[in-house]
View (cartoon, rainbow, N blue to C red):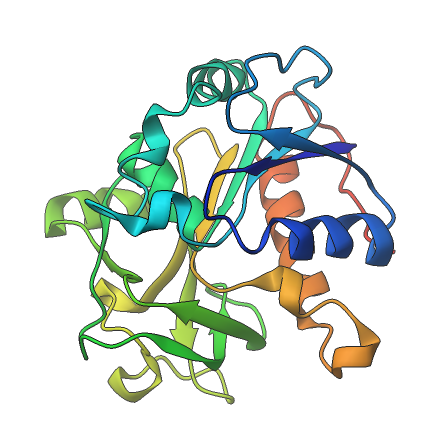
Amino acid sequence: MKFGVIVFPGSNCDRDMQFALQNELGYEVVMLWHKDTDLSMFSTQDCIVLPGGFSYGDYLRCGAIARFSPLMQPLIRFAEKGGMVLGVCNGFQILCESHLLPGVLLRNSNQQFIGKNIYMKTEKGEPLKIPIAHGEGRYYADDKLLDEMESGGQVIWKYCDAEGNITPESNPNGSTRSIAGICNKERNVFGLMPHPERAVSESLANTDGRKLFQQIFNSRTLHSVNRQSVLALP
């Protein structure tokens, strides 16, 4: 499995993602400039990552300008063919702006930038401690769409406390239904606000990000007709 990490003007987590995937997890990583248009070196078994940061300075709306970068059209075609796409923080915002994922990311409910460790979990999973760093991470969609997403298994992670309880107090940004991350109906495009790439190294005293990456890969694998076995992270 090979990864491509897109670099937009203003990205500041692209090298973090590269280091985590390449140095800590042992995968091949190709850095992609946002003006590239050739993704022919990637197969549908590979993954393209949109990292965190402040693409185009977050002018207009977070991710609203990046969606028009030249690489986005090839990326959309890659996703339509079944290729895996992962958006983290600003990458999640770009995926929503590009309509590869439903819903929108709004200003945090406290109207302030938040940078801290939080807890998040899948429906039946253990709570994972993962950092967040965003000012517009409040996920929103209307109730009809949210009901469809939850019934279809598209709501993958929710904010929780250290014991796994989903409470208003454990929701750091006011996201609707405490949503921290989602996927598309086909389960090959994933977006989340927390940063798993910042929690994979023993030197940072937190490796919960490894488990979160595993959840992403397994979620795609278990629901894809193109994949037959669960990927294992080192």
